[in-house]
Structures are given as C-alpha cells and as structure tokens.
Length: 266
Image 1 (cartoon, rainbow, N blue to C red):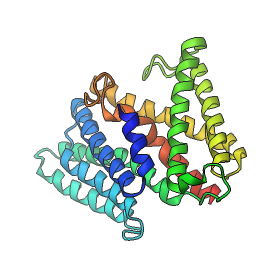
Image 2: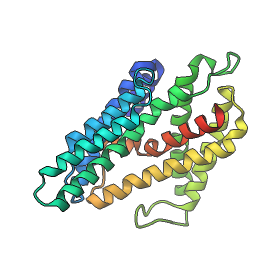
Image 3: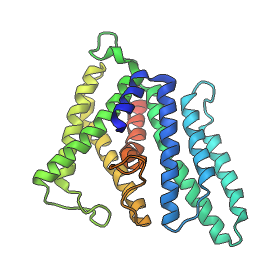
Image 4: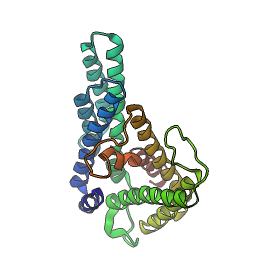
C-alpha cells in the first residue's frame, strides 16, 4: 500500500517529496509517542510532533533556513523543558522532558531523506540514470538499498538462517540473514552508483554501511515496541502495522548515507 504512494511522491520530487517526508515524520511521531506512553513514559506528544515537523521543514528549505537546524533543536529542548515544569513531581517532569526530546529527534531523522536529496552530488549528463537527477536518483538509491537489504535478509534467513543473535530484541534475526541482506544491498548500491555516474567501488563500503544502519533502525524500533509491549507501532496500514513499522530502517539508514555522501562523494 505504501510502496506505490512512495514511488509516485519520489517521481514528482521537490516540494512534494519534502511534504511527503514531513507527513511521514508527523505520523511516525504520533506512533512513537503512543508507544512511549505505553512503555510508562508521559511525553508531551503534541510538542514532540511539532519539534519533529519543524526539523523536517528546516531540511526542506535549506536556502531560507540555512544553519537553523541546531537553533530549532535548542528552542525545542527549551520549550519542552519548560513544559516539564507543569509536572508536580520533578522526576515526572524530567522523564517527560527526556522522552519528548528523544521521540522528536528519533523520528526527525527521517528528514535526512530530504537532506540527502539536497546534498547529493550532481549526476553527469552521460550517466545511465541522468534523467532522474540528483535528488530523485540518490533518494532512490537509499530506498532500493534498504529494500534490497530487507528482502535479502528475509530470504536468506528463511532458507539457511541458523545462527540467531540479539534474541532479547528480535528472536527471528539470524547472522546468515544479515549477511545475505548486506550482499544484496551492496550489489544494488553498486548498480545504482554506476547508474548515477559514481564509482561503483564505493559500494564496498556504502552497501554494508547502509545495510547495517537499516538493520540497526529495525532493531531500535523493536526495542521501543518491546518496552511498550506492542507487536506493531500502529494500525494505520491494515495488515502491515503502522507507519513506523514501514520506515524504521530509513530512520537510521538515511543519515548514514547522507554522511557518506557529504564526507566522501562530494
């Protein structure tokens, strides 16, 4: 259900992509604050969602709001801290403050999907995927890298997975599945780099980095859900759980890919 919508938004790109990511950020925020409440915290959900949205919008308008991301984060921390004064018990105020800031910053990492599009290197005119342009091309690389990891890990884990790890968080995960996912992601990243006119050799580092970040993102959401005693993050997508269940891998993978692009490829 989410895949066709995501591909249409990506195909249009620009403000529509930014608006789509901002919407995902708010929806994921609603779900994560609900989970945190079920886990025994009392976050200021509305304030947290506003802060996450502000960070996403800052990423969408880099020229108008250049350098204001840290300022927005600081103001958000201040306002949420002041909201904590309303709690009679100081421990409750501190807990609410920390939970709200965590939840807001956690889901706002999705804004790196927008930041990736803004920071991505230009695609040479003679590159096979030059028609996509930098924004759509590099965001597509991110999407396909994460999807290929998930698919490769699932298929490998189902067929030859024997060595389970981190069972206290996700009992079904296997080392063989992770290796299969990393291989699949590395191959896809190499093809996409070639298509975007970049050296496919970078896939030897970038493929595993994005794949392992995607796995970490999935496990991080599992920690939150286990603490909340929940199977899914929500019910917005019938039969598939919530929005956060669909984008958890991107929460960690997007900033990792963006960092590599900015530090190595630009």
